[in-house]
Image 1 (cartoon, helix red, strand yellow):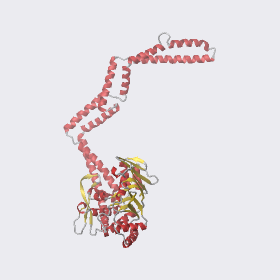
Image 2 (spheres, rainbow, N blue to C red):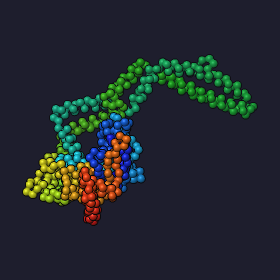
Image 3 (spheres, rainbow, N blue to C red):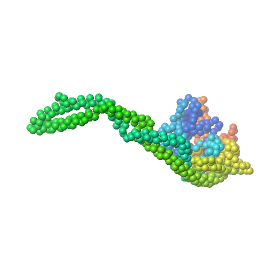
Image 4 (cartoon, rainbow, N blue to C red):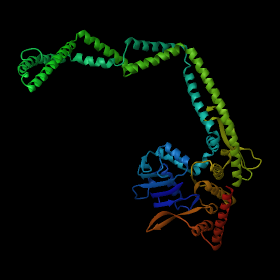
Length: 564
């Protein structure tokens, strides 16, 4: 649930902090007191767009932070899928807004605004005028129906989506295969040319690296050879070379080795050095011979490197990539040479995939329609409880023109407000106030199936009064039994149902106007109800009516909880 709201430097708000609680939280206040700012602050924390004008005059930044306490395992699981991990059951979303930019954080870690919105969709449902209007679009009706039927259709829906994607992939492959014979022949000739060019090169892995090393040696052969033979001269040939001098030293030590143990050891070391030097000289001479290249050898190596580099520019940056490309083209050649069989097999697979998709879609549709029948009954009953006494509500099904990831069902909510009138789409019948009540009826039905713990209602009382307002308040109380509800209202009937009542008001001190919010005790709640009921003058009769309304609301909530 939404545990805490902290707002700083927004519009008329200097700094406020609100602790919300379980059940039905009601916010009331005079027009212009700042109720919309409170809701707007929550929206900003959840990623809504903002304008710099919303910052309090003179403030360098605005700040909103909302803290959720989580117990719902499904919510926690969904957050973990986004790499968001509650800390001791707490998730904090915050947003600091400066002129032209903002910084969003989750549990203190900076995150993109897109992630903030994804987390918000899991944690809270804000129900305002926009959500009322969403009922006018039939594309949203299937989503509501499936949300109600989720447990019954989850397996079938996943299967249908999987089969749909497999079918679409095969269908696209089949469509792409519908080329004429001339095009195929042209492609086949081109593929054969490419494959033959690669085959003729007789490439082997690692050959390019070997040739590049050899080419470097060839290009610098004279410099390498000069150095080798100069070194060989110092160690093996010429006057006073190392080998000759070492031999003299060995002869000198040989005469003393037999008389002294230390001299004998040194003689052995020197003999070993002589042996190593002889080995070195042989290897050096052999290496020197390999550095002697003819112009023809250099030309052949250069041509081979050019051939390999030419193939690299066309088919891949490495020999392994070129060979892999060749293999793929060979497979394509085999396919084109047996193209008729390939198309026939693909068509068969496509037809089979369509049959499987059709079977799964029909199964999904059957279960969905059964669940829709239960949903329409519950919504109709809920509407009657909201003072739509002669209402008829139907979830109308039509078959889509083609398969979709959702199956073959297109759903539309249809309603008749009065007895004898035909069922018609919501968009052709319902007014703004009626849409608000219809959405409330749907929310009431969905309350037990929704994983979102916190619901915020704004403008739920648009266009209603009297008995209808009382019915709406009872529905709000019912939802408050299973969810945390935060509701902004102007109606005393709804405010009287509050489990926790907050007053929003403007206060002016030293020429500065600020919005404040406070939790009311029972006496203060009755005084606020009296203000709503009485208008300009609050008489004793109005106060008595407010106390009576509050008392009746408590009794009604007890009876509602008893029916749950």
